[in-house]
Amino acid sequence: MKVLTTGQFHGQTNKIHTLDGITLTDTEYTQAKVDWHYHENAYFTFILQGQVLEGNKKEIYTCTPSSLLFHHWQEPHYNIKPEGYTRGFHIEIEKQWFEKYDLRDHHLEGSFNISSPEIKLLLYKIFGESKQLDVASILSIECLLLQGLSELNHQQKNITSKKPLWVEKLRAILQEESNRNLSLHSLVQTLDIHPVHLSRCFPKYFNCTLGEYIRKVRIEKAISLLPIKKYSLTEIAFECGFADQSHFTRNFKELVGFNPLAYRRILLS
Image 1: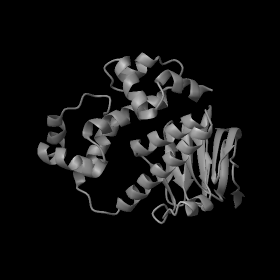
Image 2: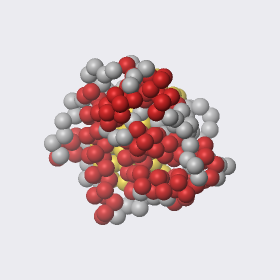
Image 3: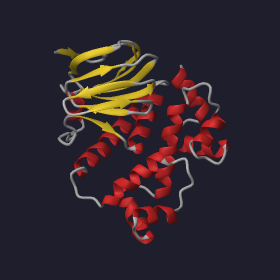
Image 4: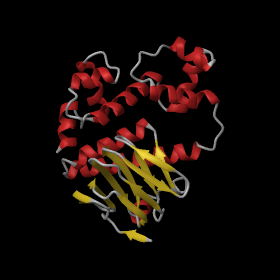
């Protein structure tokens, strides 16, 4: 089985940045099929444009824009890419980096798909910082990565913990219907729980308020649409559930650190 070393990915790597124990690559996937292989480093794969199917020993993922996967080192997987342009952003993390910051990575074993909008937005920030790399952005990337890994470790640790059935049901509703103006009344009717219970317990399971979570999901969806040139920013705003472009722009900058037009230029650069 082929082993890929630091900075090595199948395809055309357009940009690569090597920091102290972190390697960032912006890669166009050019091969229709990549046979079983693994990487010497743990890494994130963030799909920016297009599609790719990725399989490992346990699961198969159909990855579209904003899909985020994590692979620990030496985790075998394969890729199948349909016709069309596909681009991915990778963050490789060497063992020495984990050791330098005394990170406990025992909850990050294997390969898995990450659905958390909080973690995805952190990765989008890292991508943005990688396009204006200077001393400040290097510091920012490390802090964002530490924050993302901490949140990921926490989420993986809690996967096996017992949660009420309504939590995952609500998560699915918010992902699928984030562009709708959902009401508290309709949600509690669907979930069959008391509104006070939902309001009190939501931050416990989602680490933010209900409104904050919906805005994060909407912005994540908006970023996945930005590379599609035929959509104007106004159209993207309405598609993702924002009342107008100014509301969209304000929330986008607050969560991503760039305005939507600037980030679109970064994605298309």
